[in-house]
Length: 207
Image 1 (cartoon, helix red, strand yellow):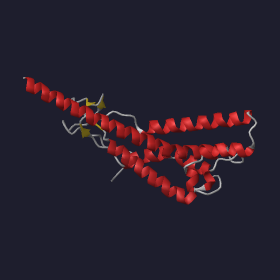
Image 2 (cartoon, one colour):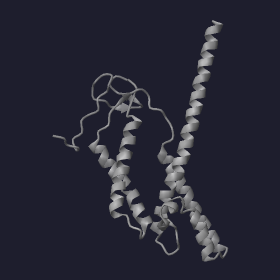
Image 3 (cartoon, helix red, strand yellow):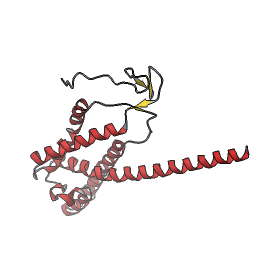
Image 4 (cartoon, rainbow, N blue to C red):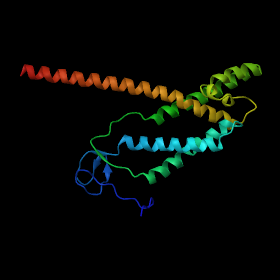
């Protein structure tokens, strides 16, 4: 009978013994092994589907930013729960290093939130009118505002509404930045591989 609290040990595909990964290698045989990126992508995909289904039941137009903030906070326990339901597996080879999507997401949120706070206090210090402050906050409400106008950050809303809206918008900015990073990284790796092949071929010709 399946018991998610009683996990089966991971098996090394090389020595076929219980694997303990340290430094990207199996402590038993020294083979290069890793948990595949596809496993973590599946966890995040299932987490997104779970939260999307929950959002259709609990998400309301009033204080929609707060509801979104609560759903984002629930992301971590839901992902942990799915990791118990779906056990990981091991693949041979080295894990490719790189900046994860979470880095870009945190950077986008931190940048947007600090800019929103700084520009808000700057407008207050300069004696801006309420309409001018609202126009400034409109920038931090997109692109979610184009999906639902209730995501618009306003002075009569809760702080949690603004944080939820900024967190949701940060996802789209981070997605664009991550896609550009992966595209440039793939291009550079491909050019590096081509240069290595040319260098090897030149060395063989000289010999």
